[in-house]
Image 1 (cartoon, rainbow, N blue to C red):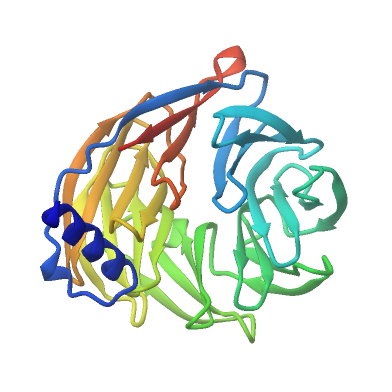
Image 2: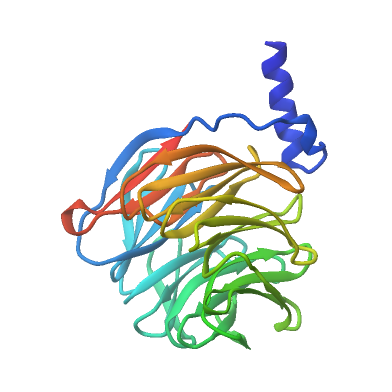
Length: 327
């Protein structure tokens, strides 16, 4: 019992950035299948977003976002009329949700309580990833064909800036303490660093030897970015200077990454039907602790830090479903 209590205390301190990495060794992740939630229906899929506080999971699917209760593991609603939806972001302070509608170059603003659409806002061409920055309480849509990011004030829905980018943006993360947003520029093999106050790109960081980075996740406490690269690497990068401090091999076809601050585990969801799970042992050490077998096509991921469960989407037509894995 003493060992279990000590380990739990170590986890809590490590999540807060108050414990040296060397005091908490890497262990097996022990993730396994918990549930398959059948969704069904026509259309493709892309990002999933977990709203841990509301116990909800939002899943992009064709022309709508499907809403799942993560306690009951069942579909409870949808946000309709989101043509070519890619992603969903929640702005809790504004009590608003946002979707990136790729086919109509707009974002839908919806009420998370009623799931009703409030309004739509124009973005650049093909908005893909979408992100909420709690520091400035703004939404960023990353416009794949527009080579730009559209910045929207969450409370008013007003577009406050358009940020030109050097190439095709993919996933992004916010660092509210540093006042930065980091975004993968997939076709340039670099990361764009955006100042959230000036809405300007202040730096670009090369990711070599990584290529065509897609997913991105962030360890805010220890200033570490995790990116999934299509040449089968997950890189860990120092968010203060862009230095690549560690990397591990991953599966083929990565499209999503996640990081759990409570366990110091970083995840790479791969289209080949695997999730690579690595432990952040130290500021410059990343160790693969599990290769989780999922299902082919399950390439995007969402993590709920409350339960530590991960969610992946796969399938088509009536077989479209969400896979739930936990410890």
